[in-house]
Length: 161
Image 1 (tube, rainbow, N blue to C red):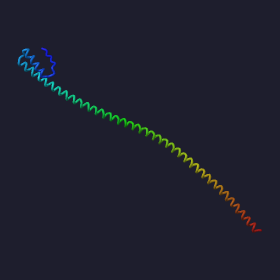
Image 2: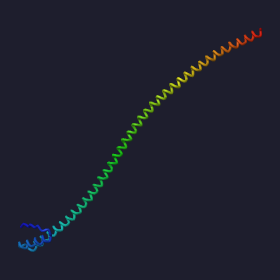
Image 3: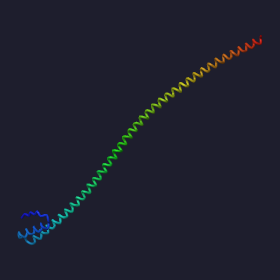
Image 4: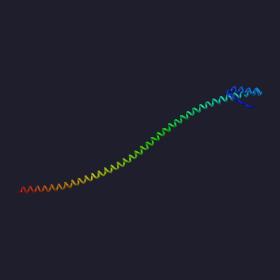
């Protein structure tokens, strides 16, 4: 026996099945068993529909959580990108600072060299100046002695006259 039923209502399906079984001269016990099995199947279908509805709700909740997590990951990725940019900027600043320090070291070395040359040349010039002053003093001493002798001679000559 083949049952084909295109009826949307479950009760109509049950009554149709019951009429078919009576027509085929089924026994009352067999009909009760089939009816019990059919009611169990209908209950199982209802439970399955509830389970599927719950699963769909759970899936929707999971999808929302996944979407939230994806948004958080996107936010984290953006923060990481910002941090990477700041690190790159800091590296550039550090490199620029290193170059500035190197340049300052060269300038300091150059200034130290220039100051050393100036100090050395100043000491040499001062020593030369002192030597020239000593020479001039010794010449002036000699001239002063000569003049003193001359004055003394002239005074004697003046007295003698």
